[in-house]
Length: 200
Image (cartoon, rainbow, N blue to C red; front, side, top):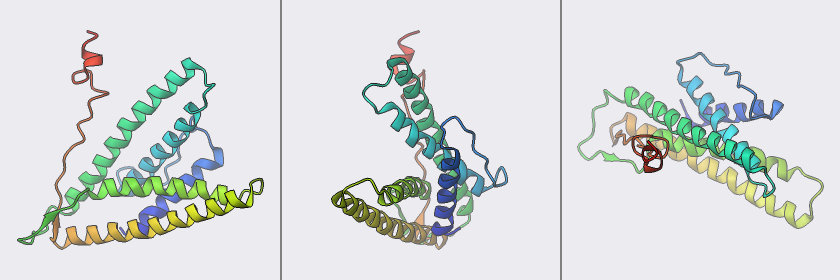
């Protein structure tokens, strides 16, 4: 699957989310459970909800009890995001498991799924800057700044998709090799976070 096809799934999910625009609304994943496309949609949905959770917690006058509830939700979302990225990389590990490595094959600075994580966030930025570019209630100067940033995001999208496609091709042809290091998050683990295991 090409990076452009993946981006289109991300962008489609972001657009679908904003039809309801509620962090409490469940997603309607159109892809078959167990498929890579289903996983991509879920990843984009988690990112989209977290984007809006972080907006909800940002105002200085937010109720402290609500802020704590949102913070806990964001923590769970971060863990879910990491889990989904690792599942996506498991997909690529299976896909490239039988590739014969070239003698000088190197490890990339990031795995394909972590690059796709960046692409998912970029889809959100492009969507929201698209809204800002279309606003009529702002000064000409602000509009120009938003247009410039929007165009930069589009350039980043093209560059990132090209880099992802190059990485996947290198992996398929044995010029680079897949190697995974699990994130090993500590903050949610009651056996590893001293603020949690110290309470026992």
